[in-house]
Length: 174
Image (cartoon, rainbow, N blue to C red):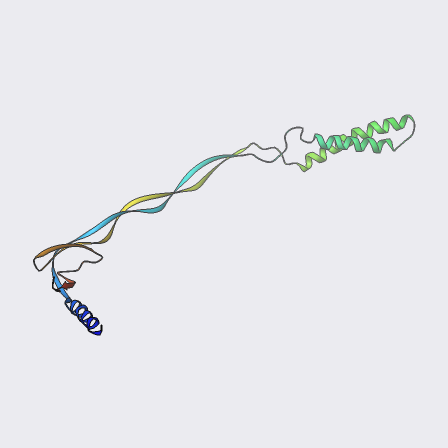
């Protein structure tokens, strides 16, 4: 049994010993740049001029109506407190009229005067995402000769006139 195992191990070692590996060089026949088109995003911006109508703050005619009503009510109540008999009625009406006038004037004094809307011209920057196609160098299509046979490879760099090659030869008996 030991003899069979030793013969099998020897045959295996002989088979491995017949594979040869070494480094050599090949002659480069042609090396052309290889490009691929890629999409490149970019941002494009421009200015636009816009006309805008801006309303002005202020009061419209009769916008002091609330002040007049409130002033009339308060003046009427205060006038009713003064006097007696027929004079009480006159004081109530007089107070209401005076309160209406005073309330209206107070409301108008607090409000801004009405102004026409104004047109504004403003410049606004607008931007959009765009894409353009560009050729990017991805490597070199290389044609080379090794021992009379022509080969092709896509390499990341231009190898120059000579190309290092790694050779594995199987010289085991068949």
